[in-house]
Structures are given as structure tokens and as C-alpha cells.
Image 1: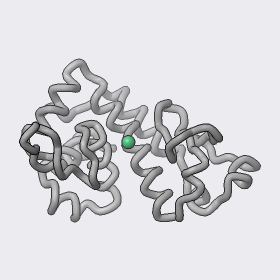
Image 2: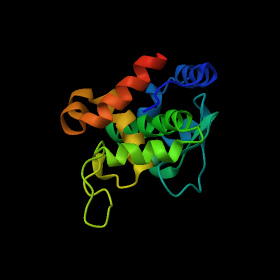
Image 3: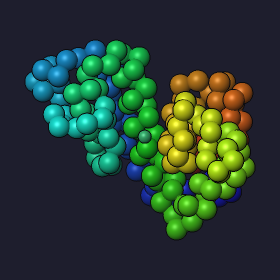
Amino acid sequence: MKTSLSNFAVLRIQAFLKKRSENSLLTMTIEQFRESPILGYVFDPNLKNEANANNPESITLGPKFFDLDAEGRKHVISHEKAHYLVDEVLSSPDKYSLLFDLVDSGAFGPKDDQGFLSSGINGQYTPLENLTEAFSVYDEDPDWLKENYPGAFSFVYSIKKENDI
Ligand SMILES: [Zn+2]
């Protein structure tokens, strides 16, 4: 499985991860965020889910994000950051074969009778969300990932090591 990224992708990822200092995001209220926003984040009062990383320049936060406690917010931020990273990892023409190779290798746990992921990482059932969650959990609790999803662990490990990200 190909694990090396282009130099340009690595630079983009490093820049993206570096500019974020989100510690104060873990406890601030919506009003506080609106008064002094954190670089790299925007607030959307109409966002239905907690957060979205659909733009490499910023992560969008919805009202639901501010209902979470610090631990919950931390995981949402880590997951959304991982989406950005996964976008770069998958920004090649063979991205679907990479995802399906990972699924077929059992990296995200077994498939059920109908070929769906039945016990994916943290309950995720699509290949894309599993890979995203793998990157997120790798940073939060690498030992847990290694023990429960060794294939996902070693893929993320290779990507991070080979590309120094
Ligand atoms: Zn997601």
C-alpha cells in the first residue's frame, strides 16, 4: 500500500496542524468565541452537527459543539483535523482502492454477511470515517488502536513516519 505523500501535501498538512492552538476552545462559550474567535475556526449557527472540516483553511463549529464538555470537544477537534489529513492521504486517483484495500485487509475490523463493517473504530461504519477515526485515535490513544485495530494502526504509523507529519 502506497504511504508516501507529495512534498506539497506534507507541507500543507504541517501548516494546517501548526496554526491551530485550540486549548481555549475546550472551555469557551459561543459568546466568547464570537468575541474573540480562534484562528482556523469559524462559527456557523446553522450547522446541524458539531463540526465540519470541509475547507482546508478552517474548521466550522456549530452550536452543538459548544454543548460538549472539554473531553468531547477535544475528540471532535481531533476527528475534524484528521479529516483534513485523510483528504490529503486520499487525494490520489487510487483513493478508493486504498480505502477498499484497508477494508479488505481487516484494518477496520470484520465485515458482516452483507459486506458492511460491523465493528468499526468507535462505531464508525464507512471506510472513510474509519480511516479518519484511525488517525484521530492514533494521536489520542495509540496503544488502544494498536491492540484493537492493528492494521489501521500500522497504516497510520507508516503514513506519519514516512511523511514526518
Ligand atoms: Zn467524520
